[in-house]
Image (cartoon, rainbow, N blue to C red; front, side, top):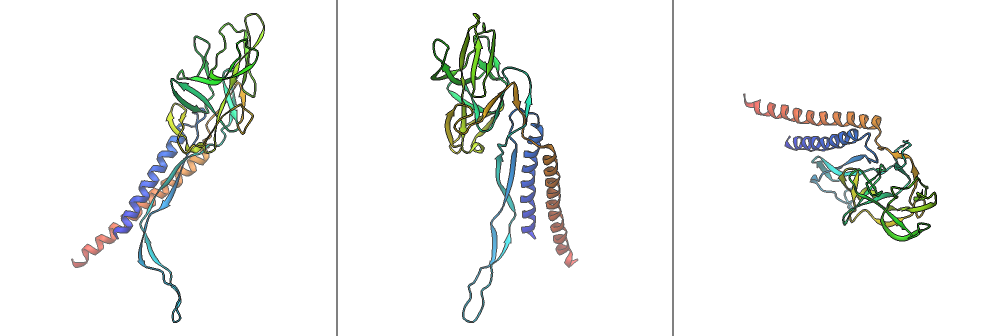
Length: 274
């Protein structure tokens, strides 16, 4: 009787965790570049009441007899599928179509993000909403070519206009009407982006299991291209999340019913002598 109770408790705990993840997905349905979470379950250790036996000359083999002891959360994954693209018409809104992440820097700390809503600071540097600098290749001193030095990207405040190519090259027209290059956006590529650690504010930190393969020019070396004046939205599907929420709710209710039924049987055993 007690085994069924503890199995029910483990099931309730697992479905509660799944509902927590679903709630977070739904809360971030309109968060830029958000990647939804997914919960998977595993069975727990089983109690063996009889071991397996192989066949002998006088008797056939028998299978093991085991009673399961419930379930547990196996993993909470970040699902890095492509979110839908929304056109905004704003020059510093970038969407990545394909693999890769923007690299932003705060001091000596590097962060990675799929949220492409960037802005200018007072010096013309391109920053995200928290003021972290977008990183890329710097231009040569005369501003006519892309150099090999990595650093923050800057468009002079005196520029008349600017544009971003699909390969991340930032072009602008200076105050004299001459075309110049402000640099080239680089994208970080990971063989296992699900291994990145979420730290809030649409940012990720690298971990030892992310499989960082280096920085690459957009639309090359396996990374996606950059779409100007557009943003990648969340990859959360509300219909799917509501369906999973209903299934999780029913699973939670079923596990509470296991506890209730086990309790009723124990009550009957206690009342046998009355």
